[in-house]
Length: 152
Image 1 (cartoon, rainbow, N blue to C red):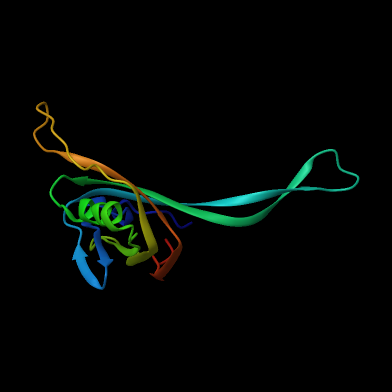
Image 2: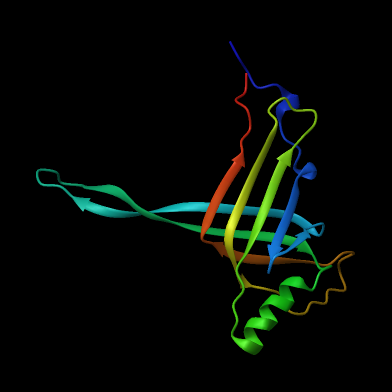
């Protein structure tokens, strides 16, 4: 019977992430964590002869959050561009998970059409050793050019 080997658990510290903004690739070295979620939107379908409603997928919504060290001005610059000119910038984020001790290989996910919801513009905290900030975003599309190999 196959089972998951402990060494196939992927280390979160070994991930890589890149943002492609206006054609420039930025390695996201300041990233602490990132989570992107797809949620299906469903419509209710009343059916003759049933007392309950059934559900059918009617689309999806992509949202995410990232916590980063307060060590880059890039996202503040993007928000400032929107504030000053009205130009809203959409960009891509590529996330690669690969752990050399694992036998399952590499997974690459590309979030496309990422758009910022909120950005910390200034921060002070005398009770912390390192400043960080949380950024929320939406995305319009997603690709997965590399997939983990099946376990076992």
